[in-house]
Length: 299
Image (cartoon, rainbow, N blue to C red; front, side, top):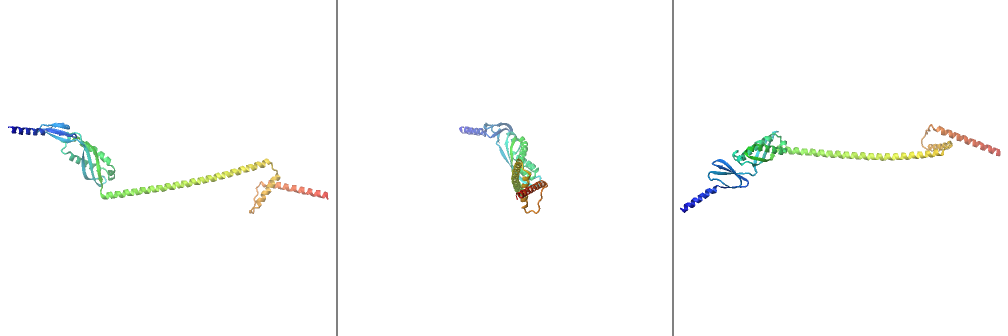
């Protein structure tokens, strides 16, 4: 009788132990009673009725869906290999359990089909340079589509967009040619700028030399003008007679005659000076005749 009691107590203990469930902090427990959803249990210790109730644990942490590589034809008919990763988190454990049979497979196929549509609407160059745009659009599409499954797509990242080898080689050659062109343009612009600066320097030097020559000539001319004005003023202040002017004119003619020129041009105004010379000659004649008369009287 005692053995039977012990066996019965052990069986009861085993049955009771199956009704004790522990829910981890990142989990939610869905309790079903006779195949029907009953309630949601939070983290901690939870008791259920053995054989009548069962618990389905749902992971509420952010998870990753790895979208496998696939061939996608771009708008300009280039086949590229594209793959991505999708990050999501469960917002409603009931919906993710009962509204979709296999969320991972469903999310993978949904991401593949929409990725083909997005990349297919872009040319190769646009698809290679529009990763952020593709990521944003794909995240919005997946987030709207998976909302009824009780999940939220937090972000989508394209891992790679790989064109064929021949296209990659052609792109490398194009990139090299573009860089060579830019280098030639920069070199030509540098030479042009150097020539401009050199020409501007030469022009500035010529202008400075011309300004110096101009200043020198103006200074000399100013000095000569002041000298002429001084001499002219001195002559007028001394009130010269016609005899003095005639003598100075004869001295000037003597200097002119000393030159190598075979012809001498006299200005029209020289007639006045010549008249003075004639007057001086007459004066000398009068004085000479007077001297002769004095000598005759003395003799």
